[in-house]
Amino acid sequence: MKNQNGTGSITKLKGKRRKSWAVRISYQDDTGVMRRKYLGYFETKKEAQEVLFNYNKNPLLFSGKTFGELSQLWLLSVKEKVIPRTIFKFKIMLKHLEILNEYKITDIKLFQLQKIFDEMTFSYNYKSSFKSILNMIFEFALKNDFINSNKIKFIELGKKNTVIERKIFTKKEIEILWKNLKIENVYTILILIYTGMRVGELLNLKINDIDLINKTIRITESKTSAGVRTIPIPDKILPLFTDNIQYGSEYFLEKKSEKIQYWTFKYRFRKVLRMISLQKHTIHDTRHTFATMLNNADANSTSIIKLIGHSDFSTTENVYTHKDIEELRKAINLLN
Image (cartoon, rainbow, N blue to C red; front, side, top):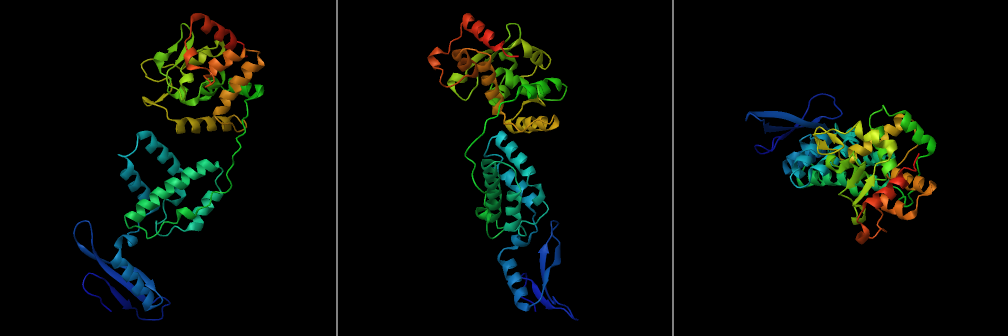
């Protein structure tokens, strides 16, 4: 049975076949040549008619685009709308979803997606970020007629964990870090532990803000105004700066002449802990460890608050004299 020109045909195949109804369409390839192909084979004429009707209504549903192809098209569509750091974050997250890349976008079922989320070991908030990026990709596919529905909203994330347990690095764990200094990126964890810097402060630390002669660090970019401060470099970790500083670079931590992004640092942080068999820690645990170590060394509370750049420290007092720096140096050099 032929339909009007350009709309395809349905043919009853000879012989004993379970799926004897074939749907064939004509299409123009990239070179402009007309070609024919079968959309599929079906048990009943009615099924074949429905498929052909849906094809003529929206040929893109039969394009065979995979999740991997659609995710790359989506990335291209948002590239000019967001900052490069966000694109980098998206790419890192998509690596965790590579299991879907070879599946046709139209063939992905809700139960497959739910299984991926059920097996994730990430936090509730991180799972929510994955659901968000999937929703954006499927919405892009829906708006561009590659799919006819978006079921991402039905993915369940499980219970939300509201309590965050802070664990300090133990004395034994810190000793293990020192013993493994030759392992790449171990020194960055020790710097965080012995300076109390926020991870964002370390990533934004510029070479010009490191004074190796006077042994100080100037924090000029922080999440709070109180975070803008001067930190004495403890004698114990001075070699971690002198051995790793790269003059000519803009930032202390760089990769291919660009500032290292948070997601890259987080990945390296977790990798190091796994490599030296330490328990799981958050990056913020380094800062908590710093404050605890100072407290255990009987440093005065004012020095501790100033060193960690806590918001309780009034911005009107955020002026450092030579005497202040020396007092802070005494406190920070109490650390073993």
